[in-house]
Amino acid sequence: MLKKCLLSVFVALGLISCAATAPTSSALMDSATPQKFAFGLWGDMPYKKAGDEPKLPAVLQSINQSDIAFSLYDGDIKDGSSKCTDDVYTDALKMFGSMKMPVVYVLGDNEWTDCHRLNNGGMDPLERLAHIRRVMFPTTSSLGQTQIALEHQGKQGEKYVENTRFSHSGVVFTAINMPGSNNNLVLNAKECTSKSARNAAQCDAANAEYLERDAANVTWLTAAFAQAKAQKALGLVLVVQGDPGFDLPETENTDESTAPGVSGYRHFMSQLVQQTEQFKGQVLFVHGDTHFFKLDKPLYNPGKLLSNLTRLQTFGSPSLHWVRVRVDPNSSNLFQVSPVLVSQPNE
Image 1 (cartoon, rainbow, N blue to C red):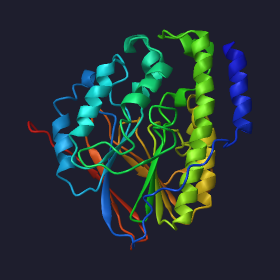
Image 2: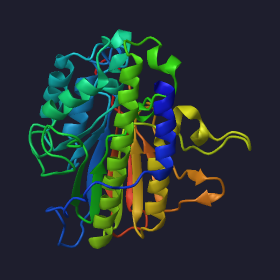
Image 3: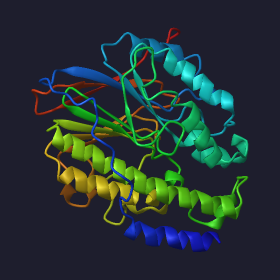
């Protein structure tokens, strides 16, 4: 059954279309002249098994004392080898609630995709995803002590509520549920059941979920670019959690983007390339998952530089730091990225 479903997955990847209804334009459109501002990016923390908890307060304090207008958290509120129990999500809400400025939460793989693993409690990832949609988006606004209104792809508690969008001073921000672990695409029967409580039927359901969400994600991506064009935005910031593996090939015969383990990102990334090519502004593509800071302009296709796309990979456990991005509408370098290294009290 899994083999048959996989065949459907890969056939559908070539035929998939943006069938979902496009959302209405955001009520947060900027009418005033864009002004300079800064925002923060952080994620992949805290990991209890890595001993992150004593380090976390310094990170939160550093962000709270900064000049940012808001921050975006790019997933993984827990480590990948601990149980996906309800307290994980309530603890995360407390963490986000301690932030003075608005926080936009983006889903990571550790809090739903990987919950089938035995060391995660052998839980159903799709049930955990449904739980996150009910719990982690209690209102239509952001999290944090100060909040901003967000446009959501789905209604509260329902599918794709986690895909959000807002505009600020000439830049469109969009968050999309595209997590690590190959975007929840299961490649084969061995991968399905290895160190896992899943059965074949659950893996078929995972692949069906992947296909449906991938189509919805592309719809949301397309709508974000359409809004940016309509607003004549200077830039677009896209935040996901999963590392899609679009690095430069290290040799002529090596291209990370073609590896099976990142095949679940290919359709979405091809659409991102197409949309970026048709956009006059700057695109900042942000992801976590790999846990070390990286800033580059990757060649998605060999020999083809996407000059207006910059990839930013954020810090993660055990390196508990964050990234400050200054937006300067008067500069040809719209997004000015600075890693913020947080010193711990005992260091």
